[in-house]
Amino acid sequence: AAAACTLPGSSGTVFAVVLNAFTGGGELARFSLTPELELQGSGPDSVATPRATLMDPLLKSLLDLGLQGDDELLEDPPMCSVLPLGPIPRESVLGKALAAPRPGSAGGAGSSRPQARSGSAPHRNRGTVINQPVTFHRKVKSAGYGPPSEQPRVLGRPRLSTKPAPRPDFGPPVPSRGSRALPRPASDGNCGGARSSNHCTQERPPLEPCPEQAFQAYTGGAIVDLCFTPQASHLLVAGSDRTVLSYRLPLAGRVAPRGERGGGPAPRALGMTGHQSDLLGICPSYTDSHSTGGGGGPVMLTSADDRTARLWALSGTHAGSELLCFDRIRTNTKPTHKEDNPVIEQVQDAQFMCLDGAIALALGSRLAIYKYDLHTQNVDDDIKRLQRLGSYRCCGLMSLPREPTAGSSIVAIATNNTLMSGTAIVVSSSKRIYAWDIAAERVLATAPDASLHSRPVTCLRLAHPLAEFQSAQSLDLFYTAAMDGTAKLWDLRCMQECRCFEGAHTHGAQRLRCRLSGCLRYLCMPSEDGLVCAYDVGTGRVLGSRHCHRDVVCSVDLHPRFQGMASGGFDGK
Image 1: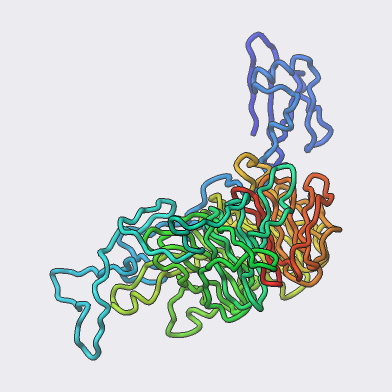
Image 2: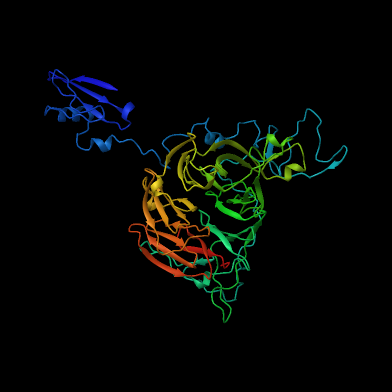
């Protein structure tokens, strides 16, 4: 673009040219006031400098910008960022997944028939006689009359139930009047994990164990993963027996039996089973306003080696129930021909996106984006409408870029579910890291080969700083851990390595998952020798370590509110 302006009281004309279309940097080429209008730069990509001393006040009066600091003010926004730079296009893959159902259209994905919430009575047309809940044809179908139908729930707008829903029994019963209550530990409410630590200040990591909070989650089994829900309402623990245990927080303190170390018996948990192979990961929802029964509640997404991803309810009348099973590529309805809706061949990871509005699945070398609806049923059949608690539909598939090694697949996905962001980070089996803009359906950047891990990556996560530490720079940090014994901190804006952490932990064979603190000051890392260590993010040095387990420590997580740490290991604790 070019502009010309003649100032009053001056015989010259100021010309300004912006080379944004050619260089992408927003450079401003300045012409002198001589009649020849000679460009003072040495080349087309260089920034010209004026000859006349009058140019500084002229440009300042025209552009309201001084020549000093122009380069910083004219810089383009970062190419890669989790912060949305604009609205998500409705025609994109992510826009289709987040689109609300049209009024009068099907409520469930993959079906053109009228849908209604689970348990609601079917709509009846008074003009024609149709089948009733008890109709005798060739066989008897009767499911009774359910509760009255209600309006479909809107994402982010929770509705309170007028009738209290029965809740599962979490934890020991409350002591009766007159009995002596259990002593309340000083760290109660701060954490509550298999192995938890005291309330941490911002100056030191939480490496002091809490024996009164330790418990045996699995007897004769191992813990393969654990995490807190973002709202700090549950602690989720995945075991080697293909089950997931949900503990309601805060955990009450328990007195250890005489002569034994550690805490007392394990608190009561809500068990979820259904996978037929080893669990690969768990991902809780960010919001608690899902339609999972009376009163709503959080949900959890799991992925396993049985080529499925499953959605579970953690609260409400369906607590512990499987809401959805992602076992087919297109929809959850069985087709007449297998090629119309093929079975998923591989599921490596599953993550929520855009405030739980969509789900991203790693299906081999492809990334699939799914739209899902909870409690939408087909009202044509009174029996089948109560057998399914939701539906889903695939909105698009995106493949990895061509790599030098054939047969690469996605092993991990990282998304910021607290924002309406279409940016996702994926790691392939060839250790390459990609920044993906799902809204634009393209790869934004790739990490340089010189900074990649030398062995497979087992952990990929975006930073989730606390409210007082959030900024445009802190939200664009992510970190990885690999079997080469190192953990790395990356800057998404430039896809460069910021810090490498090594020396205090052992990581060479197992799938370990680390966690960056909410204050962004230290990185908590598990180890295969039973240690839990903490690194200083600013310097990379070791802040301390603690031997808390008798076997491999596979995962650690920090309490979202109090930053107390919970750890789980192969010893089942």
